Amino acid sequence: MDETAVGREQARALGEALRRAGIELNWLWLQSFRLGGELSEFEIEAYLHRALYLPPYQRDLLAQAANNLIDQLPPLRAPYSCELREPRSGA
Amino acid sequence: MNTDPSVTELTTVFARLQGMLLSRHAATDAIHQLTQVARDLIDSAAGAGASVLDAGGTRISTAATDPVVETADALQYELGEGPCLSAWATAATQRLDDTATDARWPAWSAAVRDLGVRSVLSVPLIFRGDTLGAMKVYTTDAHAFSAADERMLVLLATAAATLLAGGQAPDAPHRLSAALQAALSDRQAVDVATGILMERHDLTQEDARRLLLETARTRHRPLLEIARALLGRTADPTG
Image (cartoon, rainbow over all chains, first blue to last red; front, side, top):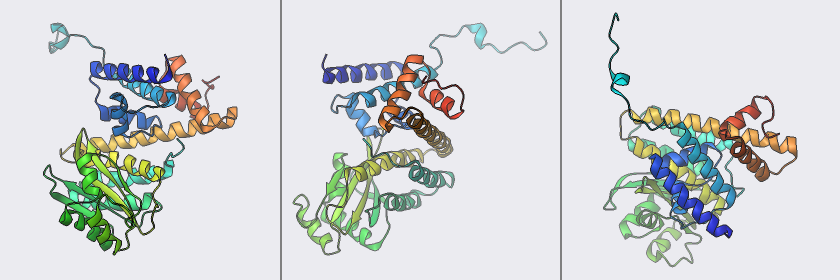
């Protein structure tokens, strides 16, 4: 794979990961900003649409930002009834 | 890309933005402070302005740092042409290097040339795909604004748009403020950690940032954790 193709696949997979995790673009921007990133939200969006090529470091920083957010999400599971009921007093 | 705005400059930006959030200024007041930040942040700028527009292109609120900017801005809406209107309509940065030679907005360029305006840089204020308006800087020299100035204004516009949009919900300002504070502190930690690596391993800033990222990746730890470990003078996780 040449570097452009690597970039495009990274962008595609990043978009997929964000969609599946329900992470919005402005949160990705804020997280990348925390990590010292310099991209605007507009540039990140363009990259996700494969309209903007980014060099490897910047792509990887976005991946790190996305993974940070994904890792912070609570695990995806359905609750049981006993987990939701109010505890009985004096029991 | 070595157009990284200094942490000090950003601290000032966000402190002032935070001030706007906590005091819950009306939109007009908030935007006025924003224009002053833009003018101060961009060295070559003589004046700055910002406008919030409704979907039809009518100005809801507007601000300018001085009368020249006010007039130049008003002229755009009167003549129905200009870089800010185009920035808003196209959701793209518009850079005008010389009003004496630019052909895109002929009537407006001619009018503002008489005011002494030569260079213009205008960026859209965008939040979640909606273009809320535009922010601009003007100056009296031609070709005065650089790519670095563009990046700075875009960075400011992103935060500003979040601020403006977020200001619509009553409790949103306080949440935004806390998030911005934390974000700035983290960014600063990354900056300092990068500096430590540069010094310790004799690296360029670029290579130090790469090392930080690579360490986070290979150790499966968040980059911020690695950065704070370096600051805390605990064992060097980059080896």
